[in-house]
Image (tube, rainbow, N blue to C red):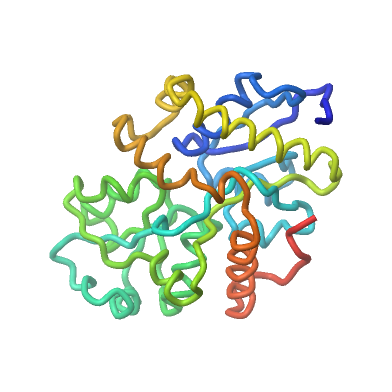
Length: 286
């Protein structure tokens, strides 16, 4: 493996899947690769990549990736992509929105819907599946369920571990956007990827892919070693919820995207472009 003399700044989220995958790398347990972590909410990572001080390596929503693909290319390891892991739309039980998922999404027109950020893949999917949506209220993902429960918004678009905890807020599922995507495309849903600046070159990108893969394999071999790091950053402190989160979002696609994973990312980008929701740009693969 290529040895980097300087620590490379890398951005990822404090969610359990990311801290699980990157713990060994951050702890210096991966030979030849030194990193400096920059942990932030996924939308904060998206916005930094879109701004004037982009990180050399960062987790990105596929939605945000579309806007920075001239600068970044996608790594094969570290992705959040799979089946049964998509964002959910939730509401209070008494809401008139609930019903058949496809019809429910159309009833969002004129309703206030909390979203976890304008550059999240969740919001891209919602816009594609509910084109008449007119009122969105961006907020951090962990604030969405309390806002829906309190009646501050009519519905919420939830991501991450929220899919395991929304019922504890007295909320009901209106639609599973990932399930709708899978039915329509036949592909798994690509949520987020690890991207590296093209200017760093192929050798560094390959070293990062190998290092992230090694970090994930190390976490799988000794998951107990990563638990203090995971719990120190998790929004949801319940250990069982953290385990469910990791089991769902860290999968074979996290080890390597493969042909199906790459096809899923290309398909989502193409759908966004065709709908006029994303700008056209170069391929995201090196």
